[in-house]
Image (cartoon, rainbow, N blue to C red; front, side):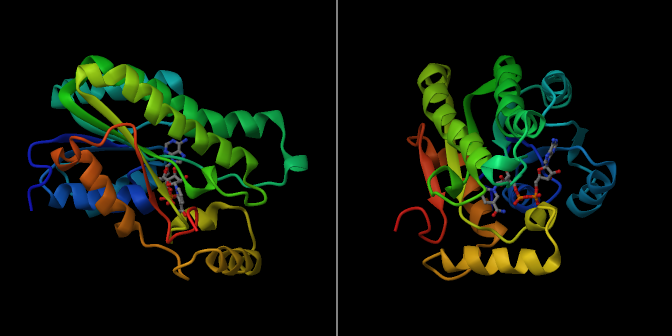
Length: 249
Ligand code: NAI
């Protein structure tokens, strides 16, 4: 399949979960691919599983200066960029009384500030046309306990999809968002929960999904391919909800 043939694509957080699955699909659709991540061990694993042709760029998504380095590396190696999937993100879930300023700032730096400044850093090298896809979440829409900060970061991305589209479409840059529902990825192992609490959370979340199950990362990756490709040339500033009905019903 060649739906992304000759497209130069960058996926942030391409070492795990939705990012890694999308990386696999991008390659199978003919894209030339770069990924970022911050953990040397998982970056090396991704290199082994995705192949030596993939450009691996170590970069912390929360670090604004690092985003400039990412853009410079992509410019040097690819000469330009057709597709940017802003996927790297953290889910720090806590009841409101347990938040402190440091944690709040870290969530916003990783999920909103870094992605924003990566888009800015890419502006000189975006091709025309180019496609930017933001990984938001159903948590921007539903009132799930302990998600106040996470949901706010994702709601900010949905706003950016609209406002940046309005600003950038004249340069041929489309910005869209996907809002996944609960997807089986390593993210749930990073919540700092015991195995028993993680299972309780998973069961409770699953009960809130009308189709009655977690989604698979591939089910998100297929949508990203659509939004990245020219098939979605008329799709601008939109949000694609892929959530088993969780946010809509
Ligand atoms: P994951 O934990 O498997 O993958 C997250 C990726 O982001 C990893 O590659 C990780 O290295 C990277 N990352 C995190 N912080 C980073 C940083 N500071 N610098 C560089 N890379 C960083 O999780 P998953 O589930 O694949 O999540 C990907 C995105 O999807 C996130 O933005 C998440 O909020 C979003 N999402 C996930 C859902 C789920 O149920 N799994 C549901 C809705 C949205």
